[in-house]
Amino acid sequence: MRFMTDIILKDKGPHRIPTSYRIDIASLMKEGMKNVNPDLYYQFWGNDKANVAKPYTFCVYIPEAKHIKGNDRSYIELNNDRIYFTFSSNDPAIVINFYNSMLNISGKYSLFKSDVLLNNFHLMPDVQIKGGKMQFRLMSPMIVRNMNEKDDDKKRGDRYIAFDDPRFASCLYNSVSVMCRDFHPDSTGNRHACLLSEQDFVFTPVNCKTVKVYHYKEVITAVSGTFIIEAPDDVLKFIYDVGIGARRSQGFGMLEML
Image (cartoon, rainbow, N blue to C red):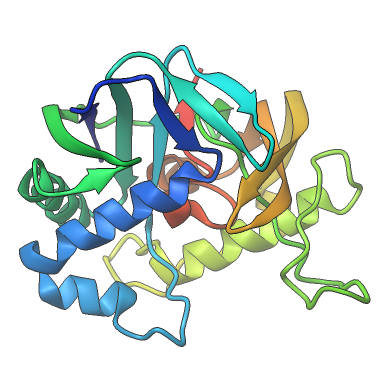
């Protein structure tokens, strides 16, 4: 289930948007949830010492973006007044809560040094997937953790790998398998019950490329482009709804069907 809205920057442009803009959008979402559903806010962000996995993803489209490399740091220059936000989850209650939280915070928050309004809210029609195979395009880059090995300077899980790494498909399967276990209910509605076999998950790149993304003061390896996934229909629908890979709730891994 998904919704979309326009984020309108009220101050006169051009606007300078940091290359790590996903952090700012996530902060806006977090702040909006404080007043709308304090219980859900506490569930997701109440423990500062724990990074709680969340069953949702979002993406931001910045039209006519111009990347500028400044003397001290790079940024994105936006000459118009709006960017486009899409939110997705497999849980309708979470979608509705974030829908309401974004409505609530409109006109009460400053983003990229500008007051913002949110406009043109609409729920998107749900989709069905059949056939056990789907070609996807990434609306936001996908990040895949290597949970199996560690580098000398990185602990296990802090290393991200490129799609042409021979370990990529296995690491992606591990990520999706954990997501299914944690967030995908079985046919009876019981959570923590969906177990995905590695033989039932096949990743085939179609037009993928490795990209570097600046996020939380580091440059990380990510993947953009299109690919095919073969998996049970309910798993394909699940990753369409909640995203794929790591850091989904920070604006990565949102998919559209081709």
